[in-house]
Figure (cartoon, rainbow, N blue to C red):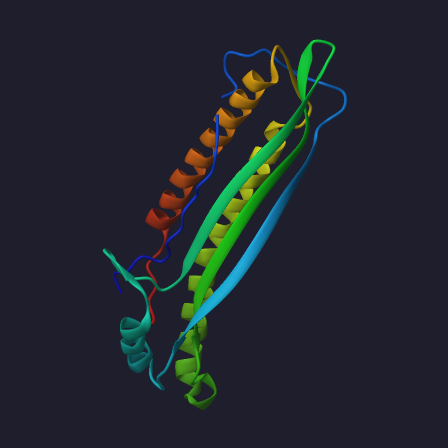
Length: 194
């Protein structure tokens, strides 16, 4: 089946760590990564793999590349708080929020189907789920990296310069993650229900 395995979006706000002297201070900032996951499904019917495959083409969402068998959408946002002490600005806390929306198919006729069809379905579903889990891992890693850039950071000068610098660094992390998501799809081994 020639279809995308997933669809996902990495979005966020941002700004850059160059041009500012940044020092690691003794008291690291308090930051928190919040991951919120929403699961959704679409139902597939059929007692043979051909029937399930046909139903997938009928009920699954489609885009320009074909049907969307599974999907991970992510929305990554961050906010840092700052304080000035000893003529330096430092990060006092940060909140990184990653919202993941995961969609996978469910097969409602599984209990009624032949064991050989269940075996094919289970193999297909495990491969699809593993692929989508890879997208989730890339997004969570990006959120963790954004969390790490603020720990123990302080810089001489105004806080708006440090904020801009950290936001630029976070934007770079998001861009790198978007490329990793695309590469994850490009590197995926083909698998299909049919």
